Image (tube, rainbow, N blue to C red; front, side, top):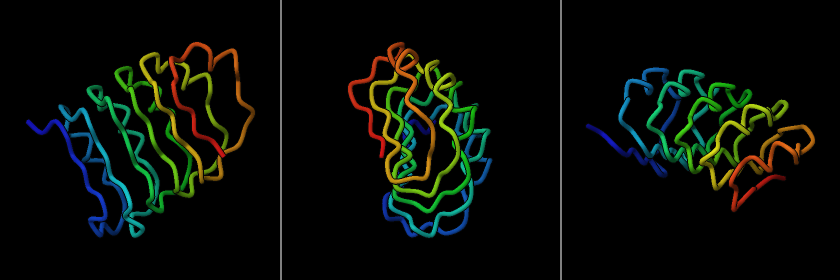
Length: 130
């Protein structure tokens, strides 16, 4: 069973296929620094219930952060920085990530005001926004 998948500067081109969710036992999924990786984050990623770390940063991903990310109840680390993600941040959904300690979303085109009353429900030690 694959528990971790890290693809750093792997020269990936194209998009993240929805079949990635077939890796049901993956706890750490890091796909970073692949500027040829485009398209949206597949919403089926929310079905990867074992994920503790999700890092999809330094790529060229577009679209919005899928609402299904809020279903990743074991998530401790989420880094989607340095892409071209846009849209409103769903603080209500993110507040369901009770185990998260690091939320890094800077260098995107995300919008919205920080909802401090929801942020207080999260156990964050690091919040990266810009």
